[in-house]
Amino acid sequence: MAGLDTTLTIRATDTDFLRQFGGTADELCGRHLYDLLGPGAPEVLDRQFAGLSAGGHPRFTERVVGYRKDRTPFSADITGITIHSSHCPPDAPTYLIAVFPADDPAPPPAKSLLSPVDARILEGIAKGTSNLQLAVQLYLSRQGVEYHVGRMLRQLKVPNRTALVARAHSLGMFGTGTWPPRVLPQFVKEPEQSARRCADPGMAAS
Image (tube, rainbow, N blue to C red; front, side, top):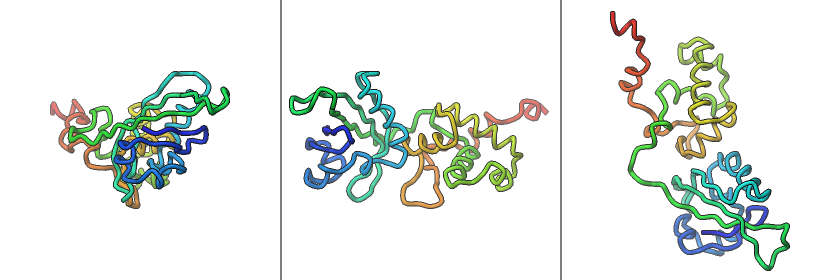
C-alpha cells in the first residue's frame, strides 16, 4: 500500500508496495504515482481520484500497468480510498492505494481479446494512422475499418479513439519499449477462432 497527497505524490509506502515496484522508500516517496504506471493510467485514474475527492464514491478499483525499477511491466489492480489525517485540513483529503499484481498465467478475459484485424487496427490508431490509411494498408474499405473501430469502442466501453488507446494501455495490451506499438499475443484471438466467428453463413453453407 501507499499513501498519496492531493497531487498524487507518494508520501508513504509499505514493504509490499516497495517489493512490487522494486525500489526503496527513499526512491519512491516523493515521486508522482503516474511515474510508476503505464501511459494510459491518467486517462483511467484521474476521474476516479476526482470522484473520491468529491465524495462521489467511497473507493474504486481499476486495472493498470505498473513498471518495476528495471522497467519490467506488470498488470495490476489498483484500489483507492480517501483518508483524512489529523495533520491535514478537512478539505484536503489524502488517498490510500493498494496495488495487487495480476501476473497470473491465466489468459485474459474473453471480452479483452481482439481479432487479428482488430489488433492491427488498434496498433495503427495508437501510431496515429487514419482510418483511410488503415483501409489501404489492410485492404479493407473505410467503412470496414470504421466498423472494427466501433466494435472495439463498445467492447472496451470507451467513447472515442483516444480513450480506446488509453484503455488498451491500462489493460496492458501493448508491449513496452517498442515502436510502432504492438498488441501482445495473449490479447489476440487465434486466427482460426476469429475466422469461424467472422465467417459469412451463406459462404459456409455453399
